[in-house]
Length: 260
Figure 1 (cartoon, rainbow, N blue to C red):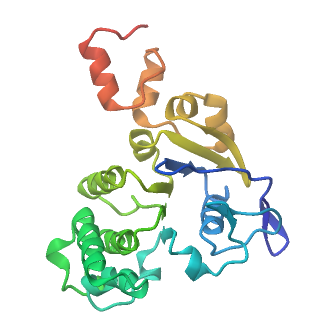
Figure 2 (cartoon, rainbow, N blue to C red; figure 1 turned 45 degrees about the vertical axis):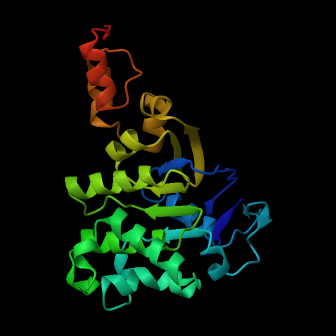
Figure 3 (cartoon, helix red, strand yellow; figure 1 turned 90 degrees about the vertical axis):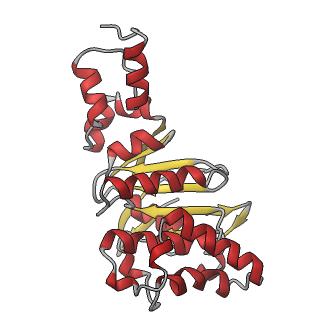
């Protein structure tokens, strides 16, 4: 698959597939093609060459509204999506527009509210909320539509520690949903994603796990991205380079199995 903006090639020779329930991070510097790829996956953009299939069907000739029933998208800037005057109306719009029956809609909306931690803010105008909570409003709006695939563009931007923890809990609770995250937050990626796509110059350089990605110095340099702090510490002190989380590091220390 290839894609160009005004005759400038942005993505070239992209070939990738996602499985049900996978949690996948797409990382790389600005201009690598991450957001362009994510917008192709949900029909906001269409490829110049190649095809995109969803459950075996080519989506290139389907409308964005049809695709959005299956592929939800949360933009980097929540203000690009919010248009209702209360949080609850914003979250309820998707299920109502998709004509969920009353009971189904209530369950979907309540689940999205619970996962996003917005229970106390339902009657609040979204634009009265800080940026971080507006991001959760758009996330809840997507979750309430119950798509099989959810794409999140820079979800940790503007979030404090509590917000990131809420986001992580949300991602892992949605165990049957394929979640694709575009992010510059390497710490967030290392903690939460078993599959990582590294992009640079419109191409996928690597498609592997956290260990294979973040201990690969030539790959990091080529993509111009930094190691998560924990892994830089592990490498600095010559520990076995198979530790990707604080929990694994703590377990290795407690069991005396750190080797230099």
